View 1: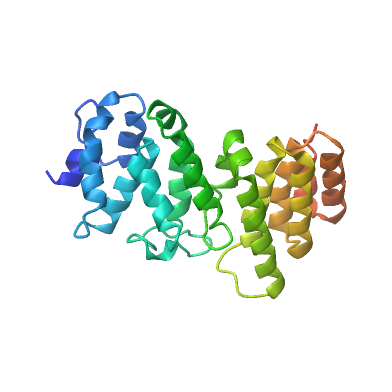
View 2: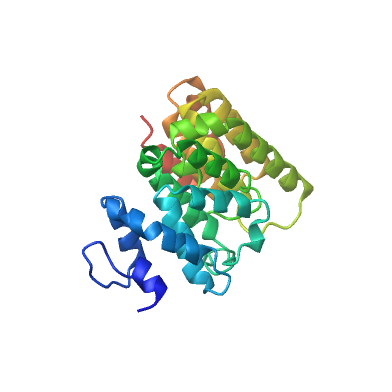
Length: 254
């Protein structure tokens, strides 16, 4: 049995499995996952190990709220395309790397273990690093909807900054490797929980820059979440300018 199989190929009942996600998920309910952390840290730092194995080691460490996992993501965010596993996971729609979306989902799932391990601040900083990449790296719809209120509140300046940069890129008309506007709308939608007016303002700025049907469809989420006048105004604007699909999505707004 390989080192990787010992760490992520055996569930917490001692049974061999090929489902790494099952092992990671099982770690939330078993304190024994801590016994695997040193081996995962070693595997993550082993340049001779396979890229897939190192990525999954990082994913497990992040999901289990381990500081080393968070710190690795933060370091990689400085030069995201130099991650050893970059382009290992390719999004089918846009044919670009989607590894940071998986790491974002893992960070979202790590809230409770991070609290238990005193790593909540590192978790927030990890999300801050991921948010700052949102105008450049594809998250496969695993960023905006994965931010809890505490993260949004702490990272609000970063959300505003990355949307501003993204709008600048869209205005410049350069090539986009993926649907940047829709990803930014998803981030703007997350702001509703802390500031409805600001969230709607950000959504409308993005829609003015890139009024595609897909982006409008995602903006409906902000219209559903915002209960005040700003949300009503956004819903009306989307109904006027959106297609039949957008109108259908708006139909369920209470």
